[in-house]
Length: 85
Image 1: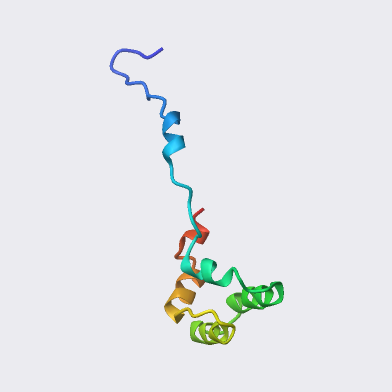
Image 2 (image 1 turned 90 degrees about the vertical axis):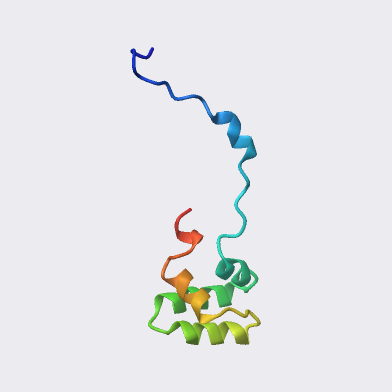
C-alpha cells in the first residue's frame, strides 16, 4: 500500500524477454577464444606480467591472432566489458 504522494514502481519483468543476449565481451576475448589451453595459460600469465602490450600483441600475431596493442591494453587495463559483467 502506498501513501498519498508516493508513486509505486511498476513491474517491468515482462521486458526481460526483449533484452538482447550479450555477445562476446570484447574484441580481445572474441579473437583469443580460439587459442589452445596451453596458449591460453601463457597469455593469462603474460597479461599479469610486466611484458608490454606491444610484446603481447606481437606474440598473438605469431599465433594467428591479429590485435593491436591498443586492444590488448584496453583489455589488460580492464576497460572492456569483460570486467563489468
